[in-house]
Amino acid sequence: MQVETLLPLGKVDPGLRAPEVPFDITTVGEQARLVEELGYDRLVFEETKDDPFVVLAAAAQATSTLGLGTSVAIAFPRSPTSMALTAWSMQRHCAGRFALGLGSQVKGHIERRYGMAWRAPAPWMRDYVRALRAVWRTWQDGVPLAVDNDHYRLSLMVPLFDAGPIDHPDIPVLLAAVNPLMCSVAGEVADGIRPHPVCTPSYIEQVMLPAVGKGAGRAGRALERFSVNMKPLVATAPDEERLLPKVRDARARIAFYASTPSYRAPFDHLGLGALADEAKALSKAQRWEELPPLIDDDVLHTFVTIGTYDEIGARLHDRFGQVVTHCEFSVAVGGEADRSALAAMVDDLHARDDTAARATIAG
Image 1 (spheres, one colour):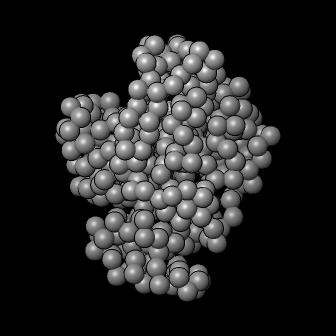
Image 2 (cartoon, helix red, strand yellow):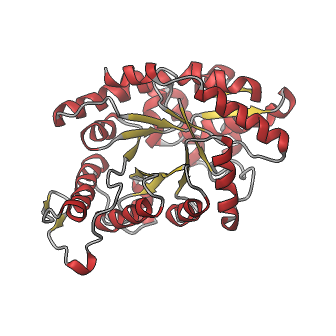
């Protein structure tokens, strides 16, 4: 199993918790070197408070073997040609170590944060990735640019703006997904999916992967190299005492996700629609403190992998080894003990191959 990490700061959900380590963009190089030394396969960065491509460019400068990528860069606010150029430059800069993770974002953000008209995201993303790849083919192979689909019409590439061929033109494209429609699109046009952390192994296997397979079948594509890249919900610490606040954080996060309509499908899959309804009502009323108590221990353990540092590697593999090829997690490194523990976790997951997951994906 390959191991990926976010820069060790943790994801942040508004109103839930502060990051474990405040992110300082000036230390990206130092952190990236640490990730490389610990044996991770790839470092990914999400688009929240910093431009992920700027951060990854700094990480590329400081490393030589570490894979790099966006966990999610928001696709639609950038034209396919603009995204193509950024990814092309990144791939050239890091000599083939880059993977492009794309996300669609939800309606409210597209309309009210980016000021764009909302359209159905799955067909939009299909046309987006096809246009993106067409631009790359134009630069790499000299194929005339000719995109004409429901969302994009591209036909102009003059020499001044032709980025030209690069040594590593096959940039993996991974799509953030929860619902079957986006999974189907990924099967058609992408190289992998990034399930949301709320997606359980049974949901990935029974809902997401069959949809990927349908999309691949329509496109006549094989799935032997298709990847499932996930940052599971994890609560871990050196010992049981320090694990308790991590578990409280995880309970709050699950409650927040349950309140979000875009993430409802995995809850419905488990018969937890009533819980999602109640969480949504509390969220709308801004009764945030009442959300975590909705998550009992059974629900908590269904969504979150919990254990001390010496337990968590095996537990992650036991839970996700059948359906995930690339497992992503981060632990704040506060000293040599944390560093040693994290290196041991990485070694543990590396020792557990992804053969079973590959077989499940390929069907």
